[in-house]
Image (cartoon, rainbow, N blue to C red):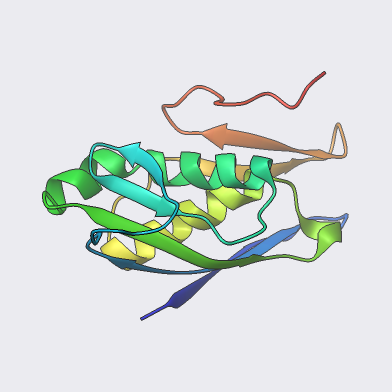
Length: 140
């Protein structure tokens, strides 16, 4: 059964937001396209997703992959049915935060320190990835 996690961060310019709807199950033979995140932990991103959003979804799942792999030694498939967001309140990094929130809620896993904060000095957002170094850089 699918469940939805609603990520929200309020800030003076409006904030960040994304809704992630997903379900989990044991992987089956002949499954269609899926990304291997860690050992037997797999992700099926929603159809038509932007590659950056898919990369950040993968990262959001990967921070919990060791715990998930231990708890599901026969394998685990996370299928994301939808990642929706208002364009004015979204950056691709938010996909990782939405996935992190969904996984923690669904599997009662600990907080790994993934978060966004509004930086009034730069009128932008700073993202923190817990003990992980920044996995991608959008700076050109």
